[in-house]
Length: 33
Image (tube, rainbow, N blue to C red):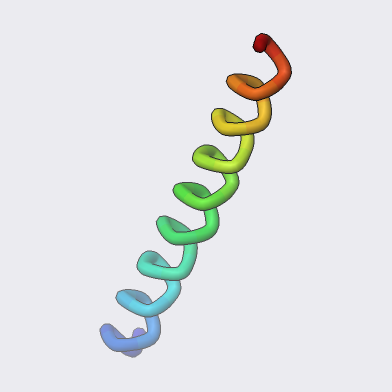
């Protein structure tokens, strides 16, 4: 297994999950007000 590819995959997954979670949290917060 290529270590660099694994690191890039994990980094990309964290960015995607973090971005979607932040966007979802922001949307829910705006809907409450």
